[in-house]
Image (cartoon, rainbow over the protein chains, first blue to last red):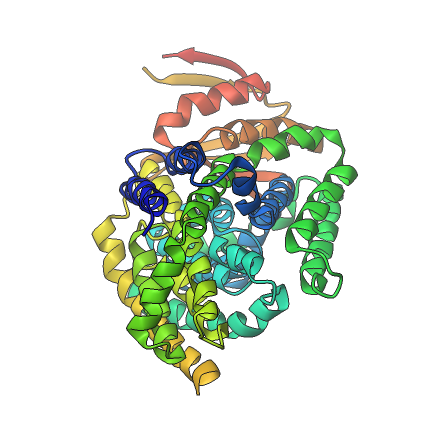
Length: 426
Length: 92
């Protein structure tokens, strides 16, 4: 290994350690890592810029703008009350409905945004029904990560994968991941409903209070809602057709975002741009440059070579190794840097003789997205919900979450193992 | 010290009762024009970072049920006062 490669690896490991231990905010430390790669001459500034994947950044930014404006309409409050009423205000059925809604919304919006929209209405409905909100919050955490697995735009690892591998289009994600995600969601929600069934009881009078709510009154701006829904519809249609139209998913999302701003006018511009999670965007930028140091100095190729040797280049064992390692790793560390490192590694495995990379990509997507369900720190949505709950006096402990979520995550990965094996490896 | 308030009976009907540790208000707006004011009260609490300070439930016929957390009771009354749903607020 060259001196440059050793320095790059050293910087990467130190930065990674800081990200894992969360001693310093992950965005600050990732950006410092990226800057160090440039300052130390491991990658040039131009080269570093080429490694920043605009498709990931643009897609996230565009969707965040669309969601911010849509949230102003009261649509998500409407949806929550509507679904609670459809469930007859029965707490157990409402938990299931909220889980399904969270998963579906997560498939098209990022998970953190979804839980930020769902948590306030969850507190509101559970307060009215006088039931413990924690089962609802845990279900929503798991559902958001599972729902996010189903599409290219649902979870950052998928966005990164779809962006790095041109063959993995929006439709390919739907075709390969949506059915398995739905099955896993069904299994997870069924088990959670069984676990919590005794805690979720309320009186007829409290149910009647919820049934009496007028969800239509929650829609604060009907004109804005029409505009938002039209643009969301067009954007989703754009995702379905992006390969046919020869445009990237980031272009679709940004076109949707700025079309909506054009329709709504300047008054939403500042707020929409303010609400873009710039910390996440800069975290990605730092990471892309950090990993570029490893790519340019040949460290990734070396790691890929070792992995191929370990599995003998056998696609079945490589695929299942990626699935399980991604899942376990993502349960304990941030799946974004993990996937950022794995993508070039899998590409190199292709150069090293593994002919069929498809099962490897899907294994990485399933492992990294679903692995986040294993622990309370496994994914951003988990941390956000736990933080909000604690602030409101509902503590979700690491151990309590682990006890429920880790076995469910292992079960989900076992289902994925069977799926990957049957669909791609025999 | 507790706060005593005098209702603006031209604008709203209001009843208050305990709901666990919290307070529950049932408010009926006497005309639709008052909706904006009550929305402003809700917006005030929506815009802070506390999710459980007040829970706002909208029912049919301009009827609102609002569950106010114990420690936000005074703050809620102040907001009602600001929108002129209350005519007087005083310490007793």
